[in-house]
Amino acid sequence: MALSPTDRKLFLGARLKRLRRDLGITQTRMAEDLGVSPSYLNLLERNQRPVTAQVLLRLAEAYDLDLRILSSDPESASATGLAEVFADQLFRDLGLPRHELSEVADSAPGVSEAIVRLYRAYLDQRRLGDLGAVGRPEDATLVSGVVTPSDWVRDFIQSQKNHFAELEDAADALLADLKPEPQEFTAAARARLAQVHGVQVKVVPVDVLPESVRRYDHHRKRLFLSEILTSPGRSFSVAYQLGLLERRDLLEAMADRAAPPDQPTRNLLKVSLANYLAAAMLMPYGPFQAAAEGARHDIELIGARFGVSFEQACHRLTTLARPGARGVPFFMVRVDSAGNISKRFAGSAFPFSRFGGACPRWNLHSCFRAPGRIITQIVETPDGVRYFTIARTVERIATPYAGDDADLAIGMGCELKYAERLVYSRGLDLKDPAATAIGPACRICERPACPQRAAEPISRTLTVDDFTKSISPYPFAGP
Image (cartoon, rainbow, N blue to C red):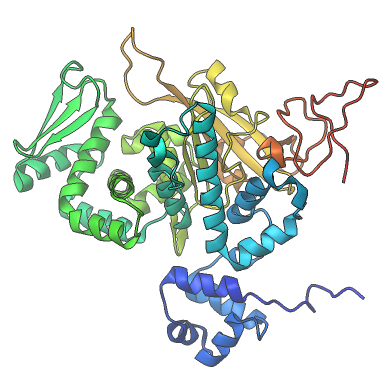
């Protein structure tokens, strides 16, 4: 006889241990917070005792947790990453079921991440081989199996749920010193740079900085900004430089604590952390979250209020995870017209492929045909979860007439249950919406009859014959 949900015992040892390590506390400290003995907590972490409802409630209260993070999630980032890895033809004969991958990701997340990194290195080596690079001694370092700095930093930021409390606190402290008037942060920051650090800010013609938009001359104490930077871009550059000078020790310590594998990765991580600090100064957590909720997340209105760009406001919205004051858990991607993803951030689980691009059924790319206009869509992933998404093109810099096209597309989304808090859902039927079925990479997507499928799923058998032409160019058999 099947057990009812109330009869099932919850053994959450691996997830409980991971939570404690993420919080950076000892068993003794967590036991005190939960009102249990250290020995009992030890038994829970070793799955020798089930987790009771009382312990779950204490966890939620003590650490302001959404208890769903302790649930076994076959669509988690780790499980999805493993599924993409084992969808490769290399592993076709193994026939690994999704639930086994979910168990591995759940009980050994570090091992799962190691497998994903190794696979990424394998893909990089294979791509270089396709280009004829493999085999030459001078290219050995390119295929050494080391994860690229951008991949490592992106994964690290996501492992922190794209939220850094230390940087939020540092930004609040800096703003308390500056005391800028509304809409006057940049002026106050420039004055601080000049008075405290002796740094002058100068906007220069594009031919002075032909290959960059910002350069700091630490010998002459000059911050040069290119004229092609937009006003929000200039403000961000000033905030970045101020944060770097005022909180260098903190940024260095955080970069060291993350233990990146090499110096280039550490440099990129430090820049990323300084960018986060700059955004937190331009859009301080409390006022920004209040403005976002008050404006029903009207991103253009929020951007105007804080003097930031659409992209800057979108990115900031994905970081609102302060305990006790959480915002809508958004995800965000940025792509170019060729489909290359250059940004991928999420305040919760991200529903798209880790190694590939966005599903072609998501309307992210269609916004290139309507520049500057916000396009909405409700999508449904294979696990049945629905998301409300918006997409819009942006320009990062003021492109000269003869310059390259600088348009990019920003995609934002959240679970459908949060959509009523967004102005963009006004007038839509959120209780019975028309949802577009999307999936991850085609190799692991099992949606049938998809006209935009680029490959058959590795878990199914291709069923092409002489007698039928299917909607999908790669029809496949069912389970």
